[in-house]
Length: 214
Image (cartoon, rainbow, N blue to C red):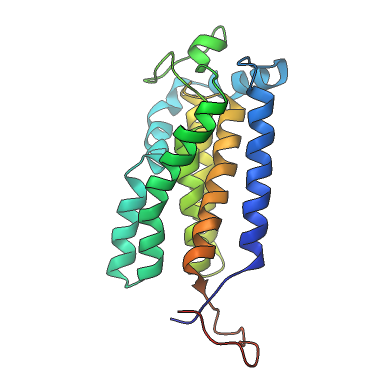
């Protein structure tokens, strides 16, 4: 397969890291500010009728999801995509646990936000960043170059956004936890895109004299 490395992925790495770093700085004191609390309550205090649909959507961000998607990629013989999806799991664990959670410790909304409605989520434990958001947005950034423009791209982005909203609705995370997680996931996905390359669109001519990447 003819592949390329994109400046857009380099920009995503830089932008995602910057947003994640800004979120980490804001939440570093371990508290939840007034504006973030109001946003949390706006989402978290919705009707319980949404609990099971949103609980199902959050599964998009479980640790095994990249491996499940990688299986589909293997069936379609997208070897580079499958490899990147597999690598997303250890990379996520490394950055989340060995870096971000070591630098920032903020408890979950059940401890930091009075009146938080908890729906089958822990009341305590490290909250920043959202691991579900890291996985969901990492998958999105890896998948987008392989999907045709249009409804499929929109669908995967919407699922990732709903996954993050679900984590707030369920009471598992405050808003900046999922924003920081989403930015981290996007950055990790872009790093992997740069590493393995993404498909060159058939309409894109290769610059003269430039060889195809492995």
